[in-house]
Image (cartoon, rainbow, N blue to C red; front, side, top):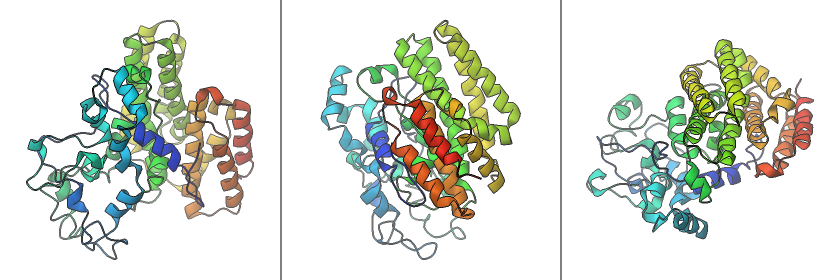
Length: 411
């Protein structure tokens, strides 16, 4: 498993795998990008001009051309999402699911591209389904705000664009909701056909896109990490409930359970600092699921649904939490201080703890630059280097040693 670090970028391989293999699902766990019925889409081509977002360098001041499209087009794996549907692995999955062509199926295009009808396109729209997960996919239909949104906040406030159909990705909760709508939801049928289990962590994945935006809010990385964890916990618990209700094979139910525990474990230290009572509720609901697993799928499903609701409420609360150096440092120390809990759900908890440690350290290092920073960074890098991609290959003793190596450098 690779990472994004303060000194070197690497997590891109993990994100590439997640982005290019994601696919849409049938109801009730339908994973797809939200499509507006009220506003029309202009297509990626409407953003690409050099006097718009297709410049070669960042904007010098608000309203100037910038390089956001250029970064997306040249470095962001989202623009390759459609192309993945043409690969032999995707073709094989489609055949198993009795889908004639993955490149023409709404089950696949719902997340691998912006899938529109002609009626949903604005006049003279510069749209191509092969653009994959493109500008309109994340920022919404631009027909009403395209011409004004680059004039600067004073002349054209961001809120005005949002009122005219822009999806508000500056809102960390809405950003997380947008991402998990494809990056985490997946049904049992698709996994059975060969689709890999999705993993997700908002801050780490955002940093490794690489970002074509700048988040101005102080301690935004930990805010994105915490909010994203709560949203991911909700989504994974909901998936667990659905698989248990549908009597999915035990292996797939267990898979969802491990993922749910992974997010709960990573979130635990933060809740102890900022939402202790809610943290106790999460612990209790996780324990109830554990008690029912392997014995009573109906009870496991009911407990998982309760956990999903708690996590959904938590996500709203965490999105409004003010993070500080003390909170971030305390949570970081707690993450590295409990290797037994970090490995209790196998790879699924270990990878979430690893990404939490990396995200939190990255934020502290950017502000405080602790003297042990280089040693901590090197230890985190080694931890990632020795994390496998398959749960069966996970070595709890090796991960424990690596996590303890990080911990000894954090004073």
